[in-house]
Amino acid sequence: MILKRLVKNIKKQDWFSVLLELSIVVLGIYLGFQATQWQAEREAKHAESQLLMRLLEDLTNLESENHRIIGHYNVQLEKYNKALEFTRNDDSWKLEHKVWRKQLQPLMGYADPVVDLPVYQEIVATAQFSNIKNQLFRSELTRFAHKLGNTEDSNKAFLTLYGPAYQSVFDHLTERKEFPNDVAKNKEQKRKQLIRDLHTMRNTVSLLRTFTKSITEQASTLRIQLEQDSVKPDSA
Image (cartoon, rainbow, N blue to C red; front, top):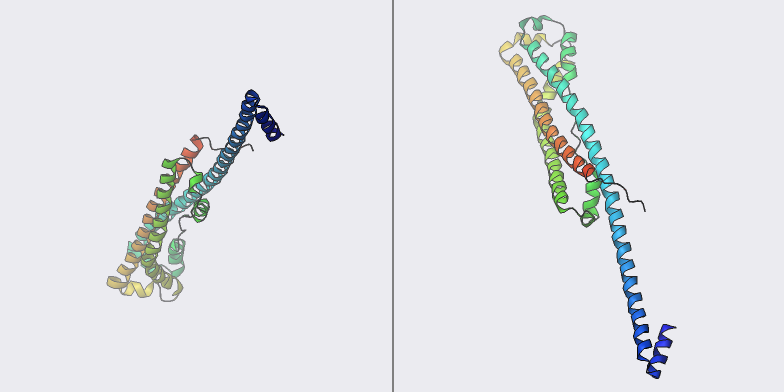
């Protein structure tokens, strides 16, 4: 309709009407472009909000789980100290196997720190970094993800130290008739080796506690930052 009127007015040389019709067309195109851009920005904001809400949930879970694991490490380290004191006591070597088992059994194994951040992995896999507008936060999040990876690698390295010591102590626990008598008879070697094994296990748990505290504190910092930025899902 507008095009027909425009051609008609040009033929009539009604330049005022021509200018008016052209203004209407240009204004319509401009408003359409603005509406499209506004909708795209609104959708991008909604996508960012949803992404950050899920990330906030992941950080909260990671922080909570690692707090629980740190508590487990603390209890376990206390038990290691008691076990080492028990092992150094000469009178302990006169006791039965079941008493030793009660001292050593709670020391066996440890909980791995939680280093999974599923939403970050999804962001990397689907190239969604552009959905996070805050560049500083993006950088901090990337550094944190690298730290999680380093913690996981360190845990694997610790296991190479912990594993042989664990196996040695485990063997003592299964030698019901021989242990602790066989170790007590060879005081200078086997007894010292048992103490060294317990120290190795305790030091591994202590290092894991340090690493876990570090990633938990950083997760807390990122979580607080998101909460202070009032990350909420878009109403749309």
